[in-house]
Length: 229
Image (cartoon, helix red, strand yellow):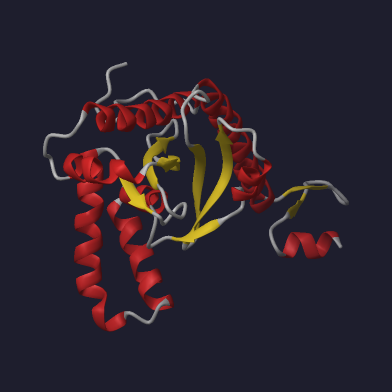
């Protein structure tokens, strides 16, 4: 069995006869699991600190071409919200999905777009899709947030922002869902650079503050979307 584990990179032979140690692949997976647990614990504390806010907080990560919810918290203690954990969405839709791709390095994002186009047989329209996607990602970064209506959670508005790790890389997306659809026109104004109500601006800043808190918990010390420390 050890020979089989060594063959797939999960174990490595030691210097002395009969000795084995964990392989690099096993160590890498262990590091990913540890990182996931860390970010969930940090997000849980942040969500708890903002639990007075109506809506559902969510933590999302990218898994290949899907966006997966790995943590939620809401003001109401309803068991049904716990079922959101594990739900996944296509990487082409929802505010958390767009956040997770918008802050990727350009070369990595292009690879992801090529993979997406190949899997969805979009070869003939790839050039147009790439131009549109790159422009959308740039605009999301400039705004510092994005939102969707009814994609992350049916019938409601969701606002999402990035979470950065200690190296400044996109690690996850924070989202606040189950918000009133009356926010939609005001959020559209913010995205278009037009004046919007204070309530819409405050809501976006609340989500950005939560994103900054989780990022700080992961060791990120750089500028966070222009928010003052």
